[in-house]
Length: 118
View 1 (cartoon, rainbow, N blue to C red):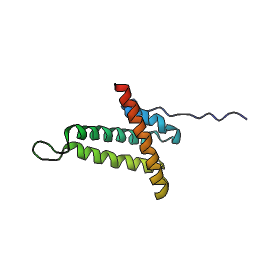
View 2: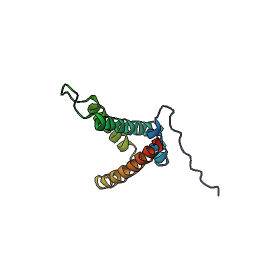
View 3: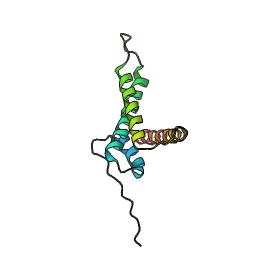
View 4: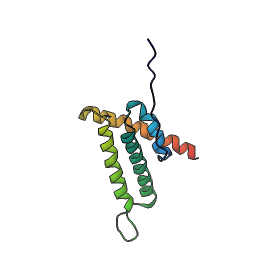
């Protein structure tokens, strides 16, 4: 019998570097390119908004909420929706364990990118 060749889907050109790295990490788990792209783009948007809030704070000079707060919340909601559509977490218990693993992977990925920027 022939060997089973595992095919990897190519990330869209419009994904930034962080999203593309996450895409490469997760593309073995799904063939749904569009939803995976949304998940990766949403994660990148979440990280970007979080970095902006870390640098500038959550309030503007006129004591209004920083617009990055809304971007961060929307990006996380899109991420979680795509995560569930892809079936990356099946039950509440496995979802919690899977979230812990995914966050570790994401933190490691963020650390790798930080080192590349230095």
